Length: 299
Image (cartoon, rainbow, N blue to C red):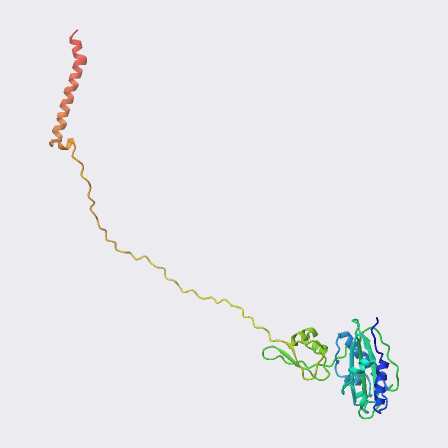
């Protein structure tokens, strides 16, 4: 089943019907306002956000509405995959969104719708008037709607004055009028998902005065540093001579029993040698006598 969508013409008819019910003249459809409304719807689809993109009055004035005179404008928006004109009327039923339908000062109107790649259709209504009575635009009475191409328009963003980091390095941004989540993310160089995660956001809705955490304080990591401790010179212990007293211990030696020679009377060694020599000589003579001389005598 195809999703229900609402045309820009139906939105303008809704506004004028409600004005008629309040006794007010219908708003004049303006080609410039149709163009700015459509371009805003394209930019919202390109960024995937359902939020106001910058100041509508500045964009409308820059597009040529008012011919350089002071311009006042308001912007209504809605986003849905499937919607009817009754849904849009219900979404815009509060006093702020009903300003184009309830206030006589508004004179001109424009509307645009653009369906993004995800199937979401972005609806935008621009209502405006010239403050000093100047001409609203070159073609204020024209009702021709600009050709809607599939190429998304370049996003129109309101400059964001970035906040100065605090002493601990964290950054907190205070939302100002006309600022959207995507433009804030662009100026701080972060993503929408990062901002939503830091602030616990479940939608892209912002309100003037909101405090958005853009960057948390960095965690201090203590890196241990090695300190070289100088080594004190160590004295090498020297050998101190130790006086050692030698104690001679007399160990008793067992005394052997005296032998035969030790029991003989002491004899002078010279006389003993001479006696042994004489006995040896006498013995030798006897041997010679019995072996050689005596056998010869018997012959």
